[in-house]
Length: 211
Image 1: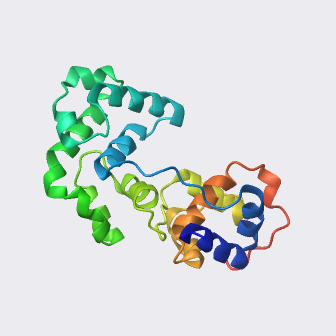
Image 2 (image 1 turned 120 degrees about the vertical axis):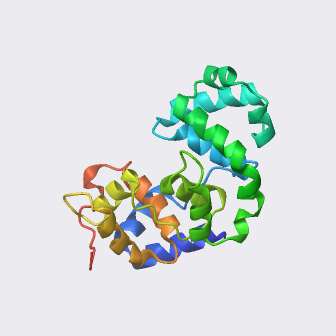
């Protein structure tokens, strides 16, 4: 049993709505890690503010232009015209260029040795990488277990449904609600995303205390 499954079992034993959802959707299933931190961050930049299908198409075109896995040298070997031709917006092109430029001092291959807070602080120095993108990197690439992306609309909506509320929580409220899921908030976030895929009435009848 991997640590995400163990975490899911623990959370389900303590929180009835999550227990019901786990019975329906199973244990957390994460996509395979990207071949490198640079590759993962580049993919995250491409996916920002785009539907998954559209972002996936652009990223595949980008890999055709650069070669895979993505790295600093492959990006720098491509012209702006080649990168824009893959579908990158002007802003995302600048972000990818800045990631390549800063890669040596970011020491991406050593990030896994740092704390979550240190990784976020380092990554947000890159143009176009904010806290949310850094948190997604922590959850999906580094598999950190206790990341709670309070700005994510999917997590906020899923929490609203799980906690039986009329309105989505503010980021401050979501931070408070998330304390009950420490030290497995990444796993809780995965279930919040799955909660948004359920009918609105899915959690009717479950009991939530202390939100």
